[in-house]
Image (cartoon, rainbow, N blue to C red):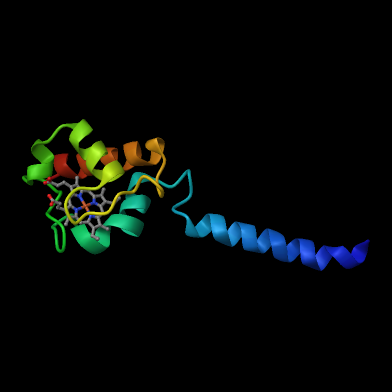
Length: 105
Ligand code: HEC
């Protein structure tokens, strides 16, 4: 029976790796999620880049929470959908992070 253990360990490693690739930790903070998935298009400081700015004074700062949630979940224009990557709770945390940054400065 001990002969099965290395195979089993490999399987566990493979499953963990697969889950890790599918998105941030379920418990990741809004900021962690933003840095991991959004900053490459919207900038680490929310100043924009490939996508529009999301920080203080931006169009996004004037929009409803619903608009932000729907944009992140379903995508918009050239922005990809994060439906497969993020849970509703994670999307909520990213929106909270954006609001917090929009209020600062
Ligand atoms: C591949 C680049 C890319 C990534 C990654 C990306 N976005 Fe976007 N995002 C865009 C583009 C481009 C737009 C503009 C879409 C349009 O209006 O045509 C946009 C629009 C938005 C808007 C609406 C802004 C407005 O003023 O209407 C929000 C909010 C937003 N993104 C949040 C996010 C968040 C949060 C993430 C990470 C979960 C993210 N985006 C990841 C490219 C991206």
